Amino acid sequence: MSDAYLAPIENDEPRIVRETGVDARVASIVEPVLNSAGYRLVRVRLSGMNGLTLQIMAEREDGTMSVEDCENVSRMVSPLLDVEDPIDRAYHLEISSPGIDRPLVRLSDFARWRGQLARIDTSVMVDGRKRFRGTITGMTQDAITMEADKANFGEALVSEIPLDTIADARLILTDELIREALKADKAARQARGEENEDDDTASDNDADN
Image (tube, rainbow, N blue to C red):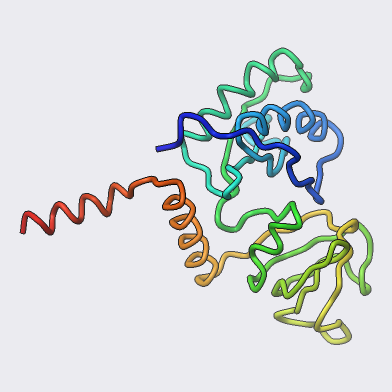
């Protein structure tokens, strides 16, 4: 279960991957509201799915996001968007969590998932290309260092990608990533003092046997 109240997020870490156009307008409307309720904006994306779908991806400060959290966010932002009316057509609102193969939008995201496989697309050519796939090995305030898992002939094995060139970045789903994500989620929930109902049920069953 989600907490009834989350502490507001003040001075939230800025995102290095941001939206443009209508997506940026929506982000500017919803992000302050999300922060005031204890959530962080991950991404806004307007797509042609189901006619027209506005996806708002969010998470708690600890990186978790439950179904109840998504419902809470939907109740907050839906009337706000109705009033501000940033989209001039009918659309379907979708609130989602980042998922395991999540977008990386803040420097802390790269730091948290250092050692994991990721894909980065850049807005300009970097080392002669605009698409990178490999392991996040380091970061500074200005750049991400990535070691390619498969380097084509003539491509550098290790690349330093300036933050201001990153157009899109996300983790790639692997068995190791799934294990680490589940471990991180469990640790975050334990830190909040949430009980694991499945564990409680298993304990009860053991006691009955």
